[in-house]
Image (cartoon, rainbow, N blue to C red; front, side, top):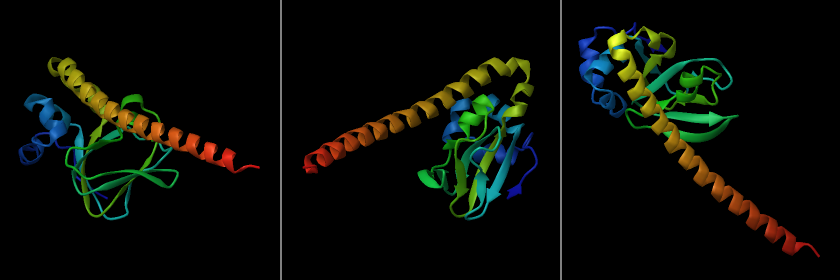
Length: 170
């Protein structure tokens, strides 16, 4: 992994990243605040970004490339759109990672340090927190909807298989 220093005052990075969907929703003042405790990280193909069951409170926004999210070695999801986030659960609750994230090809991420979020100046803190947490809630809600749909499918498939198995028994 290659990592930049914190991005405080980096106009070049601000203008390059401000239109990424997640950041665009924050608004200009809040993007500047978020960048002050963020770093750019570049990963090569196959490089692990986060590891399941390991403590880590960074939130990642995909800038370019693709990542695979897996749990216990099984792929769950691929992210490949600029602005897609991962690491949001650990970012919010400070617990260990629930999945492993691996770069698929050369991947650039904006890594936001949750431990430094309390350093946002007081005049920006409430509105920045509200916007940031709403956006994280939307990400979690989308993933929960997808998971609920997949769970419904698996339950129905399991029920059908049990029925088929019962009909095979003499």
